[in-house]
Image (cartoon, rainbow, N blue to C red; front, side):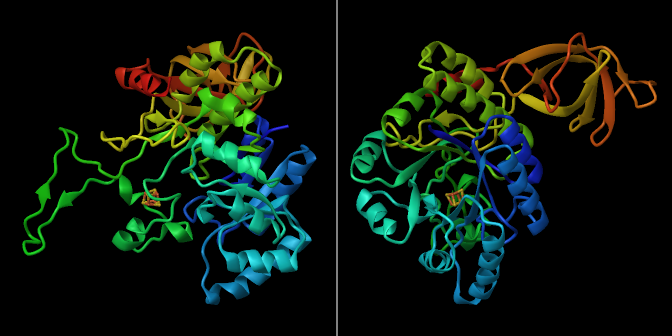
Length: 409
Ligand code: SF4
């Protein structure tokens, strides 16, 4: 059974990822988890998340994949004590010092992070002797490389299928640390690779020269996002155990929609049903989350560099979560402004329903013109809507979106 693994940036996102079809989630405590700007989990949140995930018969992996200094290890030992009381289903590690401490002091299965850049089966087999159960592949392997890798090892393989990419080698990058003091290797990347750059002649620092690729500017380090959905069958053929969605910093809406699309795609393939005709629908859904233009990453060979704007494409606004539905009314927890008009409802089975809102009501039944973030409103519905469905407002696809479809398909 292939696992679908989704990002759990905080407790709420973990619950939505499971609800929308993830088999497992990965998340971090407040320290050493390589996404210091994500909400991450307090110890209490972690215990709640672990219980929730296990009650649903799913798995939780904890990321401890920062590179540490000696001064960090006292804190690491405390975390290891805590994890022995509340063991996750796996710990994701990059640093060999962390590997040594965790493998000697716990029985928790160890996964080696993509940040460790494992690109061959020899490294994987060597790590197997340190209780390593799974390798999260470096993102620079092609599908052919993965096939050969898997032929030479029994260790489980996890591969990224969706999300942001780095222009450097699997995130081993110093641009952000150099320019801002915030290190990618400590989970604090500012995504400086996507910024605009100029050329400066050594003796004339006050005369920067714009390098103009085109009118939007110059983005020489900017990468496409990854979307491997159309080539999922090859991942299954190559014996990959877990398909990973990137994005602990992404929104609850992003995590839910991307998880539900990959859930449906994976189930379709596992049932042996026809996959190809569904790809356009899946891609359309994936174009409705905030993203940069998609590519296959390195899976089919060297990726191209994305030369245009580093901005995100956003065709839909996330407006709210349906928290209840009865007697022809749905209760909506507002996340983005709601007014009258046409909306879409997204439910876990990735069935999209259109809905027209022609009135909004407050808790006392009084009519409202708008729903504002952090309040609850009621809308009239003609049929039952599943709890935890999402309400979104989408614009029509634009030419940029079509460009993405062409790039991927
Ligand atoms: S600056 Fe860019 S390439 Fe470097 S780690 Fe951050 S996202 Fe990756």
